[in-house]
Length: 218
Image (cartoon, rainbow, N blue to C red; front, top):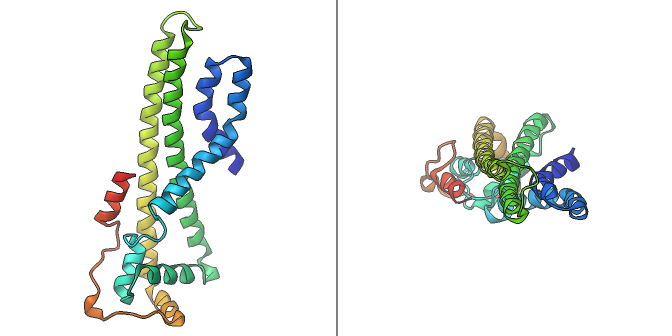
């Protein structure tokens, strides 16, 4: 299944080049599809996990909720409590599977959006490099229309990926809110220091404005 996803992600941008290239270059373009798809997905994971700190950023609603209700001193403490508690209970497996699926689809959809953008660029390049169109009539016009369609599809996929992550955060934070005493027990077991209750700031159980700004920059 994973290899099929990589192949699909890679074929989207390589097919326009394959159709415009000669026989040898066409084979090379098709062979590059699988590693290109793998690279696109890993780059999106790097953007999410490292550049945007998608899992442990302080603005993540579930972590902000834990900091408020458990009066934790640091985002690192909140992340430690979240991870240990969430993976501690075997009966929470269905919730873990749901969260993992949401993260996977958020990454996959945005990877597909980047793939569509690359395919649009490849389509434009194929029009410019073709010289004489291989098919009579308005073939360059048709290719340009395909490029615009790919850009629109990419934009829709990127927004769908954002929406999937927003819904994930709502479920994630709601789950923490429904089981926050379990998380409190983990914090006590880990010996994590808390701060005075009056220092805790109110944090709604929903994506914060900072999180929306992060999406806007992504």
